[in-house]
Length: 152
Image (cartoon, rainbow, N blue to C red; front, top):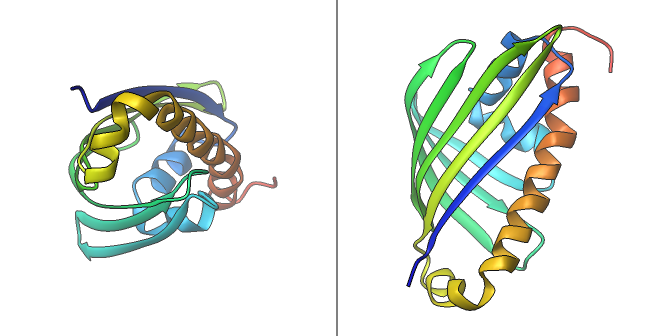
């Protein structure tokens, strides 16, 4: 029974790549712009953050992420453990005055009810992920523009 989910999401952000990188490399501030998905993010140490987030489905997920690679302004990689375990990679590239964002998210559903329901509800879990990423797309651009001192 597979319980691994692999997502690749890409979009353009009308903001300088450095500001987009700064927003993405500060997960403790995700609740400021990734609403209503991010409920809390608490810095444990310089590279480790505890996250609490949700989607449209009626459950919350807790994970701890550890940043394992950071190349400003192009790439951030984190390993996650908790209700989900795996790896997330943000890859940025310049696109004129904008930044192209790619998010690779490969995780296993480790929370018991997710593991049990994956064969039956896998498509619904994917829909839930897509809803959550749409909220990131809506919130990241205005937040990065504010970081860069640009009008929305």
